[in-house]
Amino acid sequence: MSERVLIIGAGQAGMQLAVSLREDGFTGSVTLIGEEPHGPYQRPPLSKAFLSGESDEESLELRSPAFYVENNIVVISDEQVVEVRWDAAHGTAVTSTGRLIPFDKLALTTGSSPRRLSIEGSELDGVLYLRDMADAKNLKRRWDKAEHVVVVGGGFIGLEVAAVARKAGKTVTVLEAADRLIARAVSETTSEFYRAAHERRGTRVRLGASISRFVGDGTKVTGVELDGGEVIPADIIMVGIGVIARGELATQLGLETVNGAIVVDSHARTSDPRVVAAGDAVLLPHPLTGDGQVRVESVQNAVDQAKLAAKTIMGGADEYRAVPWFWSDQADLKLQIAGLSNGYDATVLRGNPDDEKFSVLYYRAGRLIAIDSVNDVLDYMAVRKALGNGQTIPADQASDTSVALKTLVQD
Image 1: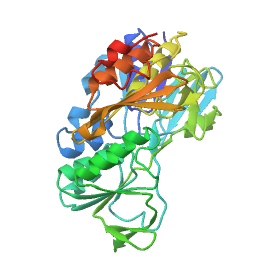
Image 2: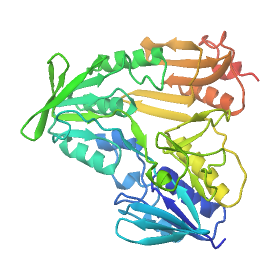
Image 3: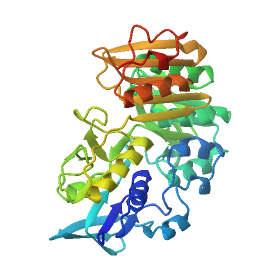
Image 4: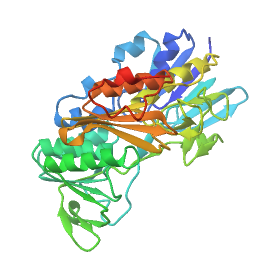
C-alpha cells in the first residue's frame, strides 16, 4: 500500500476516513486538507453546548494534534483546494496558495454550506449563519449584549439556537415560512409539539411568515420587516434555512451530481471509480433498503459512510447498510430519530405530547420505517435495533405504553 490518498474536506467524514484507513492497515500516505484554520472538530455542539458556554473550542476537537502525528496523517488547515486534475493514473490538487498535492486515490468529504438569503438588508452586521467554528465564535461574541434574537427558519439549528437564547433570558422570535416547524424531517404531530413547547418556554413562533427585508441603523441590523409592514426588533438575526451540498470539485472533475450533491453507489464510489465520497455532500442509495437516492445529513452517516469509503479505497467490496439516526437537543427536550420517514403512509402516536415524553412511529405499507422519540430513549433504542435487524413492530399494538416497545418487535 504505497498509494497516496488525498481527502478533501476536514470535517467528521474526512477525519473518520483518514482514521479508518490507518485502522484498516493502509500504509500509504494520507493527507487531509480543510479550509478552516482548525483541525477536525465536532459541529453539532456549536448551536448548543458551545453557544451556552458548556464546552469550548478545545473540547470539540475530534482528535488531538498528536494523534495525527502518531498515525502519520498529514493535516493541512486553512487552505482550499481550487482545482483537481488527473494525469493518466495519478492526480494533482492545486490549493489557493499554489501548493501542489499529488495523489493516487481521491476522497471528497466536502460537506455543505448554509443556504443564504438574498433580500434587502442581508448584508447588515448582525445577520448571521451558523455552520462552522468561525460562525459560532461570531455569534457568541455578540451573545451577551443581545436582547432580541430573531431566528429565520424553524429547522433543527434554528430551534436549538432559540432554545439556548431563551434559557439565557433573551426575547426570541422564530420565523418559519412553512406552515409547521421541522417540516422536512418530522410528522405533523412532532412539529406541533415543538411549536407549543417552544412557546411554553417563552419563544414566539410565527408560521407562514413572509419576510420583506432586514432593517438597520446604518450598518447594524435592528429588525426584521414582514410583508405587511410589521417590524420585529432584532439585535441578532440567525438565519437557518438549510444547507447546500459542496459539489463544486465533483462538477469540475465531471462526476455525476444532482443539485450539487455527489452521486455515489453503495460502496461510496462516485461515477469515477478512482474517487470516493462521503458525508453531507453525498447523494447515496437508501442506506437500509438500497432503493432510491437520499441525502443524509448526520454525524452517524458521515462516520459510517467514511468507514466504508476507506474499505473501498483498499479494494473492499462492502456495501453501505446502516440505520440512519439523528438527534436534536432543544433546552430539556431531546429529540431522537431512527430510520428515514420519507414516503410514510401512516403514523402511530405512543404516549402524550402534553407530558413532553412521547414517540411517533412511521409506517409504509404496514411496516415500520422510522421513529421520532422525545425524551424516550427506550422507544428510540427499540426501533433503532429493530430496523437494524430488518424487523418491525405491529402498528395496531405500538400505541400501548403499558407494554415495552422492545417486546413487540417481530420479523
